[in-house]
Image 1 (cartoon, rainbow, N blue to C red):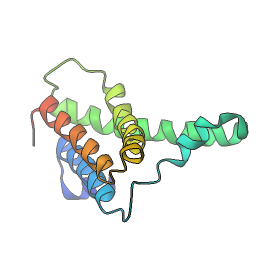
Image 2: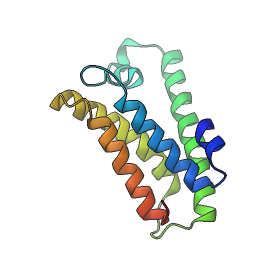
Image 3: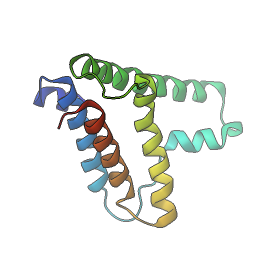
Length: 132
């Protein structure tokens, strides 16, 4: 996000750059499908981990939601969305897309699935906020 903020002063452009750079990072992973998210593994096997570990995961998730949510709210203030949308849910949506795309990528053995899904999110943001 910091890189995107250095590249543009417009919050929507920053958001689109951040998502685009995230997709590029997924494209640059070598080999087969990405290994997935360690936090998701901890959640799937919750009984194996203590309260401290789960607290770390909750705080990291909350930080993601707050940081991305703040950028989405900034973008919406300058570029009102074309449809009624829950901006916090929109922030969570990128995290959900990553997690689901990791599963899709491993299931289909398609190493490009994560980047493709992240790019779909970027397209949705462009349609929603009317900017590219």
